[in-house]
Image (cartoon, rainbow over all chains, first blue to last red):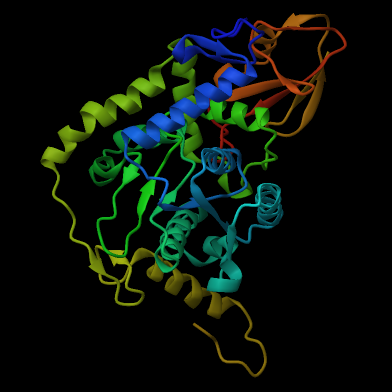
Length: 315
Length: 71
């Protein structure tokens, strides 16, 4: 197989684009897809301060890598979730990446800063750890961005993620999620920071290829809490279709953005956002989901964990 | 050739003869959309011939957990 641009041996085939590329022209293809996403969706400009959510995985590190190469002001935010055998390695990879590039990195330690880990979510809450984990990460990304004056939060969500999420939302007819799903979430409240997904046009395999070609050392193992995750079921199902019908994922997701979303928007009422009584962050109820989660987890932890001698239980 | 797999756990297989990447994936029932195939320092495409003495890694690319469905 030969590169369609230069006829050198191809390293990556992109069937959905009827193409194959050598390493150099693949990176060019990748770059163009990211530029297109940023410009067409008006994600951010060069004078914006971007907070990139980085986990140590291939998507977030690839995102940070490309934004830094393009010359954007991209600071990383890494949250150590306290998952044994996983979180510390993820943090190490992220720190090494930042050091190599001289990039600015903020670390939030869930246990040090909030007194809980994702492992406590399993014991202290009805929600699965994935749901509580996602809720906590989104809350913290927003809070740090707000407090430190960032203009936008960028995450490494890719075409596979978005298509799988869309499929799940359609299977369960989650109208509230469907109307909001997209590569840009605007700041719809003074305490909400705009969120963008610059990699949304790229398939997960293409991002992995970029990471390998750029020599990015990312964490290969999956989160031990996520065995049997529904999202992966949807991804596998979509990849089965894609294998036999290249371009299906992009048709599903990009077609939804162009045509599907407005059909739902016509019918849906906008929820009213108020400010959480505890922390002031936007919510549709009196106390936000994150504060409710923290309260539930900590009450149950106080019942099960022995108190240190001489110290009262802390909130 | 030696084939290094990572999912469901890291394992190494020995396959006989010279084979094309796409045929190896088919035999192992692996969807090409869900993996990268790496030989040494390079990515290889589906039509690449893997020789008797080569070592390749079949690296899953899907994040978000470890599904136990569809197998």
